[in-house]
Image 1 (cartoon, rainbow, N blue to C red):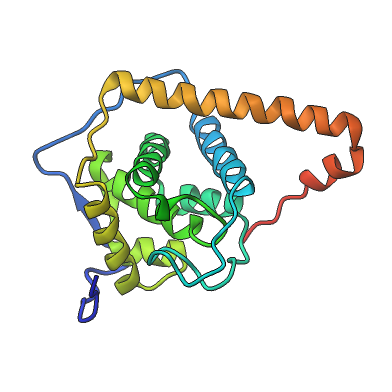
Image 2 (image 1 turned 135 degrees about the vertical axis):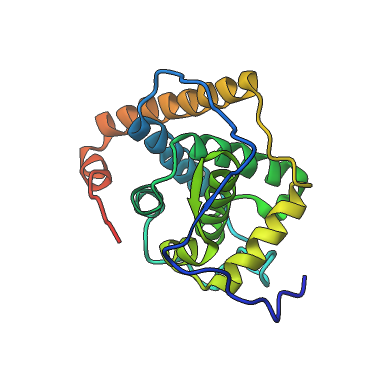
Length: 209
């Protein structure tokens, strides 16, 4: 995909609005921090179980090397600076799963997870939030250029065939999936903690960026 010649759109302080359509997500009794934490925990588990290909880049979302900022810290940065609804992270999880099902080159790993996350959350925010920031602002939040984010957004949308809608039943199922995955992680961590307390203390280290 040729993304040359793309122009930066808007200013970092621009806020765009849905004039006609408002997509409302039902309340599910989960607070914002819990949903975001489940999303981050699931991503970390996914990349721990994956092995990036050692050949050339397989998609535009791949970095040449692993970014310095940990995934959980990156997700928290997005959540705090974008002010998007927690539902965006639920939809982002659906988009990421669908993307991998459509093409295995989008399978999450340490080299592509950051770009996939910033792109998926931004797209979800544009689709369901009443107001959202411009791509230029999102690019600054994500630590990439605006022109690159424009390119990633286009590739992401075409890879999903622009199928962004998530119905009520599927939305509840996505949250249940995140809960189940994190419950398994909790059990796994507790088991490892019983056998290796040193590693448990290492897991408690929080590196923010």
